[in-house]
Length: 171
Figure 1 (cartoon, rainbow, N blue to C red):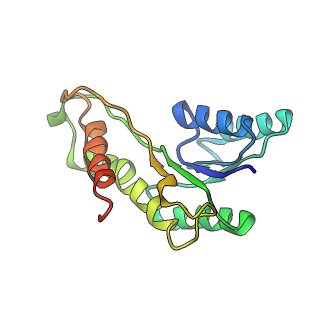
Figure 2: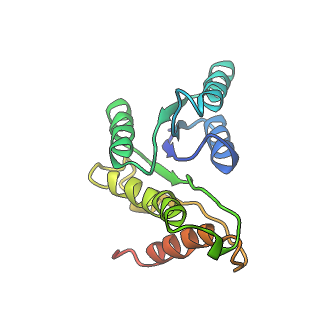
């Protein structure tokens, strides 16, 4: 039986590859990204075409992880259509490269809003609804290990914050 999978940040990179790979494995995939009507119209149309050409159960869906209402709408859409979720992959994120002292407070807060609060919003939107497999361990956060250099301070913030939450399920 196919799993119902929601993936954030699928306009490019790991998220896009995960969406394609999981859909090709026979699962029902909701590939989310922000601004599907404008900025990410191209990637959204490419995924829809792939789904049509290869007869995949892959649907693109608008979700901006920096906006709680957008997250709630996307999760509610999946739940209405499928009746539940089996797997949620929090992949969306932004990376800014430069010296830490070169970033404004606003730039760092924007990165924290997407990289930390985004997965928090998605994780929070799902638990009120039953996961179809009834397993909370199916909620995943995607990150990567980066050497501790100041040039990647906003990405490191995500790793520290999400790593801490992941290791302490009481949070």
